[in-house]
Image 1 (tube, rainbow, N blue to C red):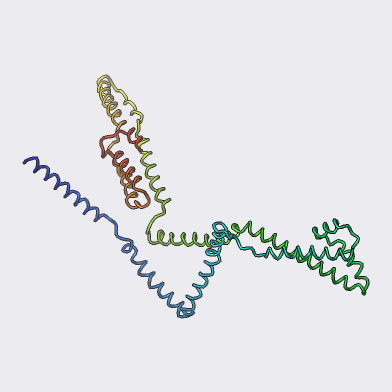
Image 2 (image 1 turned 135 degrees about the vertical axis):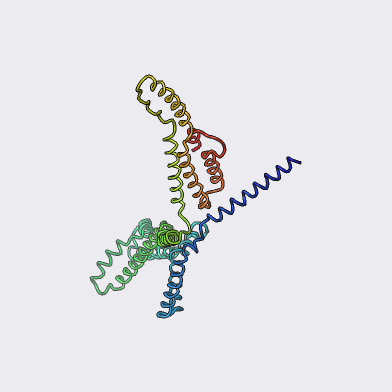
Length: 344
């Protein structure tokens, strides 16, 4: 009966202590961001509303909105949707990149030029060996055509030959133009991904700029959240202060001996020195009251950072660091300075 009463009494005390602790923590909890920055909301919202009304009244709200949406749509189409679709089509589809040039038209032009050169050779140089005619037509060699045209243009009665040579030359020029277009098409195809990525660069820069602006607005002005790097830097600085404190108190040198002024005083000073040595040996192992208070302040600062920015840490890190801080503070049992350094 007595044990049950004591157990129930201890449980009620623990429950009341938890409730009292939670109530005091709620009182010490800072106010919300809206209450702390009410003046910025009170001035910013009416100012933004008046500026929006003034702009819409002067230039037409619907027209202005329509132009802004059209510009945003055009920018997204040129720098986001079209490059992404082109990269996807080239890498993950069978069709790949669509050629600008008509390759079949190039092949037809080459075959037509060969036939024209072969027909012209059969009529103009009938006694030429067949193998040479085939070689010249396959190589699309128009050197003989140029020579004959140069000679025929001197005589007006050979105008038909000049016209025929000119048509063959035009076909040859068409073939060269199509070859150049195919080469350009292949060059564009080999650098298509690079060009599309370059087209997406302004969108990436704009997104990074907007992100930095919003981070400045929400952090620097409204204090809605600190960056992860700044939180980690603040936590590392506090841990470094704890390490410096423990290093300075880990096995310090003993106090210098006092001066002797006689036998009585010397004997008395000897006993005092013995006490000082014993105290120094004890102080080398544990922190003094002042140092322990400073250590607890640093630990409280670390816990405040972990609690206020707990979303920046995962659960395992929070649990491990909290356990280490409790061991350093001596909440799990007495520890020496050397043990605190090893835990740190």
